[in-house]
Image (cartoon, rainbow, N blue to C red):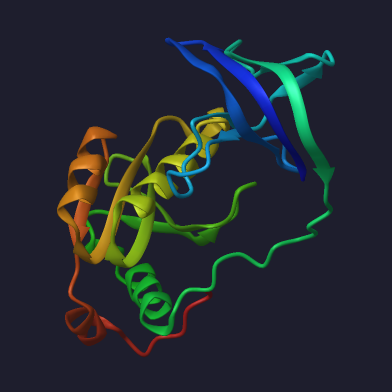
Length: 219
């Protein structure tokens, strides 16, 4: 990971245009190529970013980051205050708690409890940014990405959006839709999910436990 603290301006040109005026910010370049610009606040969400895959051209006083859609992030470095590089190694990923992991297992066994007609393609479907809880196909054959949480909040919806963005890089999958599943989906998460075009579903853990069968499964 490359970390740069710099006084900079940032311009995004793509589906729309966005400008960050001069200020001191943290610029992160991750091993997978993702570039993110952070302020000193606002929790985890960057002010602007460019997901991998992309091409970063370092011109010294400015960087140009371009993705396959020809969208560009131009970072003008007015003053570099600190720069460092670190090898973080492989990350084991987020470890779900017992209830959430079991909830995912139960839903994998009974995908129809999420939506009638769903069939499981794979549990823990691998992507470059981490595994998707469940990938299914619906009754029409469309691919459905499903993020499972015990408590559904907006960060889970954002996580699902990032996963679907990765799946859309594989043209063989066609259009992918998202479903956000939790025991309780918070009102803010419902609004964000609907705004992103996802559906959300609340499930009852105890009811699902009653649906579990004793037959052997390969997941």
